[in-house]
Length: 68
Image (cartoon, rainbow, N blue to C red):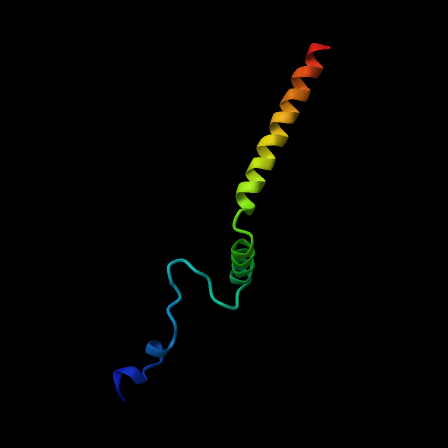
C-alpha cells in the first residue's frame, strides 16, 4: 500500500480558503450571486447610487415638511 492509496490522500480538503462544499446551499447561493454579478458588473454601483438618491429625496421631504 503506497502513500497515494490512502483514503485521506484522495479526499478533497475541507478548508479551501473558507469556501463551502460544492453541494451545500451556501455554495449554490455563492455561485448564483457570482454568475449574476458577472453578467451585471455595474449592479452594485447602480444600487448604491439609487439608494443615495432615495435617501437624499427622503431627507429633502423631511426637511420641507418640518418648515410647514
